[in-house]
Image 1 (cartoon, rainbow, N blue to C red):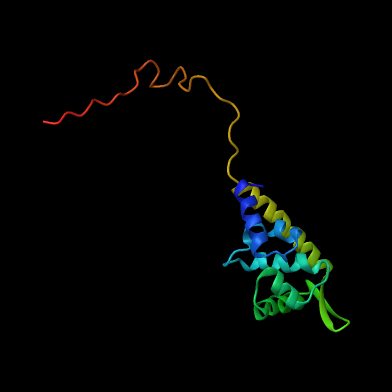
Image 2: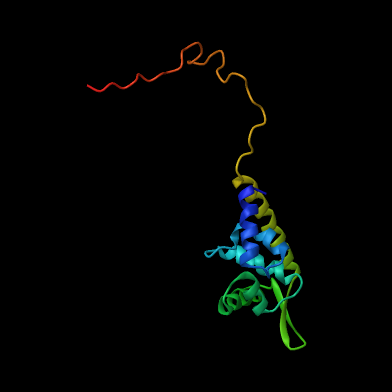
Length: 150
């Protein structure tokens, strides 16, 4: 994980302390004010693995209730989630189709993080940066002439 992501993750832990660490690690930098719908859906699917209500989705992902309800209804309609009554609450759980979709999103997230992570610093240090074919080899370093006022 890139150093900036770690700082952002710590910052997100302060903003969203109730979001489980597994969801925070999966979402990474997506818990900001403007998020892509696909990563909100990924967060809902991740939380639904243990079963959750629409209110829990809204609170843990920082959404308003209506927005969370819209996402959940869409996922139930596409059969990525199923709902059942548990005591007094309607609980949403992940279906097999939802598990496959979440696994695919995790692969995409991992690959995207790999592509967009900053390059690693080189551990090889050269004594002389100029090679035998360098145009600067053997030339003197440039020295600016002191300014004189007239």
